[in-house]
Image 1 (cartoon, rainbow, N blue to C red):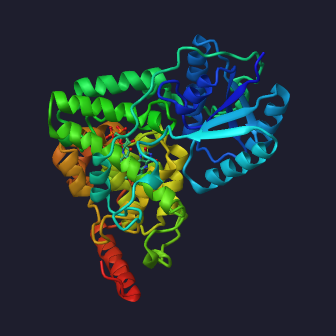
Image 2 (cartoon, rainbow, N blue to C red; image 1 turned 180 degrees about the vertical axis):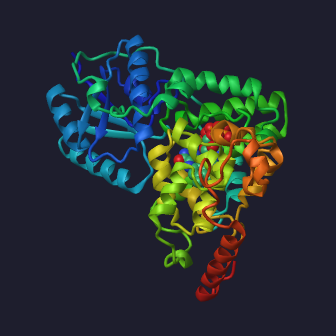
Length: 476
Ligand SMILES: Cc1cc2nc3c(=O)[nH]c(=O)nc-3n(C[C@H](O)[C@H](O)[C@H](O)COP(=O)(O)OP(=O)(O)OC[C@H]3O[C@@H](n4cnc5c(N)ncnc54)[C@H](O)[C@@H]3O)c2cc1C
């Protein structure tokens, strides 16, 4: 039997348009698809739940092609050294990652295995373009989204490739996916996730078709309203690489050619924001931990575990904020408009550090993505590239009234406010006592009073941000 090639899968849990799989197949050697739960693991709890189910779907998909998926856990280098030795594999192929810690691991593995005579090859499955191929005229990375995306649109991403027709398996027993211990046990908090999601490549591809058929036309307008389910919900599938961004790109372009309109263009530019986040992550590796704007380095963030805890639990007394945080806890996902509102509330109203909010999102989102999460938190905080200006403080009442006019989103996630009419649902404290009583609401008992006065908090934030600017003598 020919020597096998190891296909090391990471955030590319799919068979279609998977360049590492295609490269492995082209070698005409038996293939060992391998997933390693790397230790120490930084994967958040909701993502671990997703990963468990995604691996099951991937295993089934490989098995239909006559291949067995092997799962292991440990330090990736040690696992690969052992597996290449025991199977006599002479090659390892994988698709690239773009965060600094992972790139360091991958470079070390490449060097170690190569010196032992094992060839390592890496490819791009995760992005439309490799981040180092997109540069300004001055040969610098882009820091502003609009010119970045305009330039990208002049380029052609690689055309998606189909699943290779001849795949050869390699007989090998591995541990079961259950043994990775990815699922929550005591308590099992994943009921809401199960209700909403079905991880895996097949669902992702179906979801894209459904979204393009049903929701794309008016996406540019509808996408801001959290009470309607009109966005693609492809984010966790993209985060785990169950769908190729190039498939999304070309199918959307095709749709745009058939029916031109703002919906498809706006959707494409959201895929562009994902790409931009990775561009930033690659060129500014400190993105997940450090503000990109220097003047934010010594920002006087507050420290308040009680307020942070109330924010995580959806008990701030601001209904749209609480609805978002509870949607996140229950389903592992939150609508983009509401993500912006809750993030602004944490960093501007409560003056708590964006890194703390990003860490909570990291643990609770099924679509937790190191590039998009870090770039988005920096954007809301005003310290990132092309960020919202510091004086933009989302007003949770006005945002609620504008984007959840009927109040149905709040009613869905904050049922204790169910009986309030739309005109007061975003600020229950203005309702009269009689009104509240009729609606079965006892403020401070059945639903909290606001933890902070938004108008005062806004002025406090503006003052801190203004001084920051003056201190650093930097022009906006
Ligand atoms: C504070 C904050 C944290 C966020 N954290 C994450 C995260 O960890 N993972 C994540 O995938 N997205 C994150 N986002 C971006 C965005 O909220 C989600 O991608 C989007 O809500 C996912 O829903 P969807 O798939 O229905 O999006 P759609 O509206 O259907 O958009 C399609 C795809 O475009 C991409 N996209 C859309 N908006 C953005 C954006 N603003 N930035 C980057 N990519 C985008 C996503 O891959 C998304 O799946 C965050 C946004 C904020 C404000």
